[in-house]
Image 1 (spheres, rainbow, N blue to C red):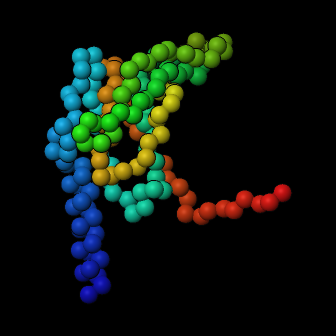
Image 2: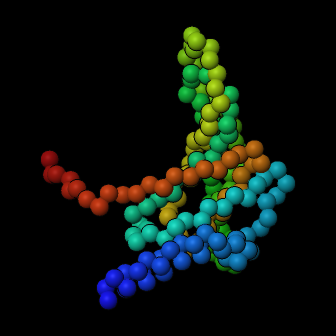
Image 3: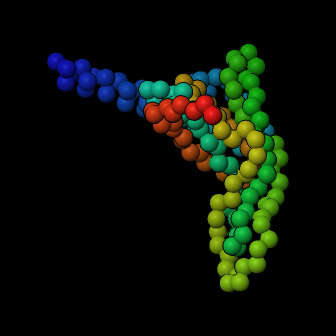
Length: 159
């Protein structure tokens, strides 16, 4: 009996996960189309048991020809609200750079590498019930990484 309950629960979770990923953005809410010069990029998250233990890091950037220096772009990911719905979406208006350290690169080698935009607003709350909708300049690629908290919580000491 327990095995069939577990199997049914697992199937339900897989079904919900697939449904969340498969749902079209237009079925969720009337998010606007991207303006000229921008793209709308969407992230669908899988449900988690304790979503408050997770965060989503947005890694927006470009693949550039780089040398041995540390490279980065600059920008701000601003949260907006979908009028009448209260759903968040995110917009990045400007990307500046690239900026880099100025070390000498004796070998002179250059490679293609993903250079991220660094700035404010790139760590988001994990919420599998709503897609993460981002409007970014046309030449920006959006990647993401999931962060999770450890179950163990430590106590500070009085000193």
